[in-house]
Image: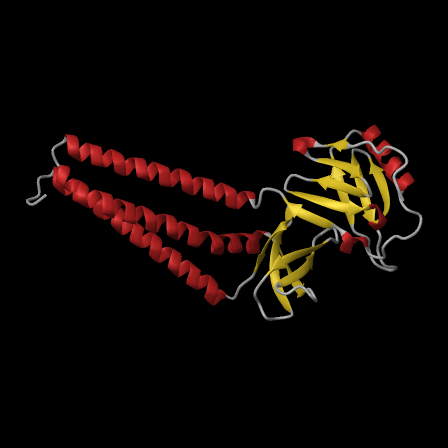
Length: 271
């Protein structure tokens, strides 16, 4: 069925929107975009400054509802009326939540911030090494450069590598502590993929190499698409020990460079 009446687009804060394109509603949130077919929608409700898109659901089950908030009340009413007028009277799917497609936008913002911090720290450390080389040259201790450069950059490499290794167990610990833990079931016909339900009843997917039929996962209640599989503690401990060793070696190299430079300035024989 084609859309015979125009459906106004709803604009939200921060570039978010809810609009119709062909036989699909596109719901853009801050961190993800959902495509909701009209045949998967039972009805659309205007609820003050919010619009609730109620999906079809099997009899006796609670329907999944996707909400779009912070819009003009009059625009919400006009949008709901326009969509309801174009919904197909027949041919709707039995369970709309299984027909939604979505994509995360820009990846995990927490990982992006962590990577940005790591890059900035590596740049500052590199500048510090260069500045230290310049300092020993202008002060007549140029021979220290042959030690500062290799030890300095090896220390930087171990510190950066340890930080990268540490992020995965930290992320899992953080989501496990502050998130919601649920069981994810293997999806038939899709090797390596498991499914879980978010608070709205939407079924989301997560990838895992586990051979079990169900696995435990935890997701961020403020961002249900941010999910982590919960590994057994020995694996977490292994990652933690590996990260600690890398960071410890990096710190030893860093302390060694500082000690060498200090010894050179104090006039230790042979430096």
